[in-house]
Length: 229
Image (cartoon, rainbow, N blue to C red; front, side):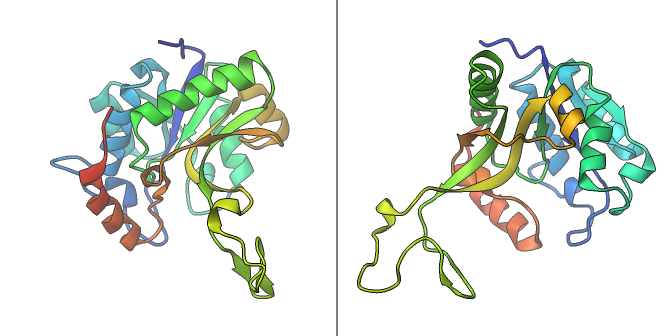
C-alpha cells in the first residue's frame, strides 16, 4: 500500500445549512449520520491521526472523539454563515495541518468509495508529487452529454450535423468529493486547486452531492448499490 503519511485528510464541517437543516447529521444507516459515514469511509484509507474534522461545533468535536480522529478547531468567523470568503476558509483551515499535502473531503458526497479515495491519493502522489506533471487533483465525472445555454448548444451542432454522444468533446463535472494540493501552494494562492489539476475520474454514484433534500433521498436509494471497499 502506498504511504499516505504526508497527506492530511481535512473534513470541513459546518452545522448550519441554508437549504437542508443539520445536513451533516442526517441519518445514513443504522445509528449512522452522514458525518459518521464519511469518517468511517476515510478510516479505511488513512490512519486516524491524519484525519481532521475542521469545525467550531462541540457536536462535531464529540464525533471526532468517538471515532478516534483529530479535531481541528475553527474560529466562528470561518464557520458562521458566509462571513468569510471561501478562500479565507480554505487557507484558515489548511494553515493548521501538520503535513505538506492535504485531501479536502466533503461530508455531503457520501457515495464515493474508499477505493476511489485510495486511487485518488495514489494518483496524486504519482502525478503531482513524483512526476510533477500536475499541480493538484480533483475528482470529476466525465460528461458525454448535450449542453445548451440561453443562446443555443455549447458542445455540438443541433442541426443536420448532429454529433453522436460518444464523439462529443470531453467535459468534466467537478463532483465536490475530493480536492488535493500542497499546503504551501494553497496558502500562497488561496485555493485548493492549481491551474493544472489531475482529473480523477470517479463513478456516477460518487458524483451525488447532497445540496437539496431530494439529493439526500437519491443518495439513500442508491446506497443499496454502493460497494464499501
